[in-house]
Length: 174
Image 1 (cartoon, helix red, strand yellow):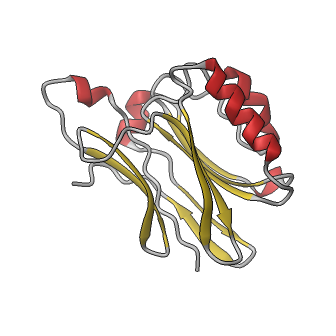
Image 2 (cartoon, rainbow, N blue to C red):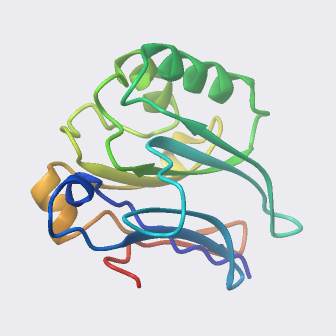
């Protein structure tokens, strides 16, 4: 069984006097394989984070961070990376902090994966599970605005080739 939990968090509270930890994570079979936080003990992986999954042995082959808040180059790198992964590859994607400011040059590639996030606004959030060249299999969840993302971050559940994948957003894990 391949089980994922993913949290998309918002950094806004980091700059206020009422800063509390917002922790995000991805677990694989109960083991944390990716994490990030604001006002917490983990680094802030701002932008779009991808995990390339080997669904046959239940493992993460590669984890990448594309800071699409800070740089249009990172959006192009995300697009290039997604073009380079093999046909049929499973990708888990999770946004963190602020993913959308400089994401525009990656939107068409994400759309090819079935990930339509052009409507995600500043500090909105999204999570997806996609299989390259099979966009109809993509499971995507979005919280379009910062307010919506804080209230109810994106959550997805999917089964891919008989293996259970879960991406869910958990707020304020301490």
